[in-house]
Length: 216
Ligand SMILES: [Zn+2]
Image 1: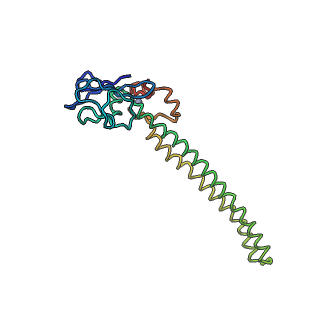
Image 2: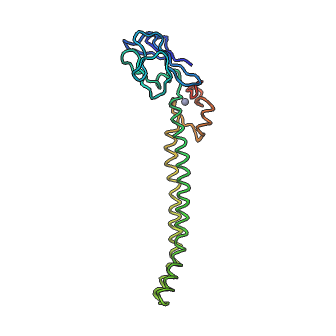
Image 3: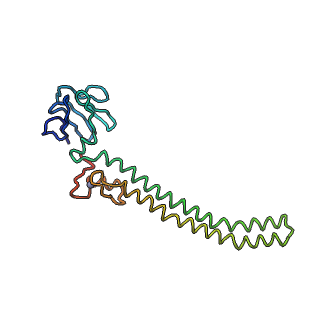
């Protein structure tokens, strides 16, 4: 795959800059990655400050055409519907969503069970205290009895309250996911489809969009 870059209108990516040649450079992609190739331009092509004829590049490299024109790799790729750089960022979005979802579910399950089981232990503790220090005083026995009745009710109430938080938390992260996990070109939500499956499809599922994610 080749993206032709220069000032002339027959390029894929047209650059309006006095120091850029009519046909200045190629952005190429093969199995090894991305390359920039200068095609005998008048003022040269520079990667991270060094003049190059052909060089492998990554998205963080600074590429200058001619005197000072900064080549934006992402927008050059977009000129041929190549959204592979943007698509890569969606991997993190998907993985973060899944791990947060699991975290919320297991964390809440733990807290719910803790709240529900803890109060059952309290009357037992009080009962032991009564046995040790109370010498069977009626006040302490009464306290122990009322705890035995109230504590489980409170525990069940707190547990229920905790589990009621789950739908809201899950709704929140699911809403954010619907905003973030979208086609970088048309903005269509990609569904709860694993990133790897989307990558295998190689392009946006919306037929009119034509965004490519895997371009070779
Ligand atoms: Zn799309």
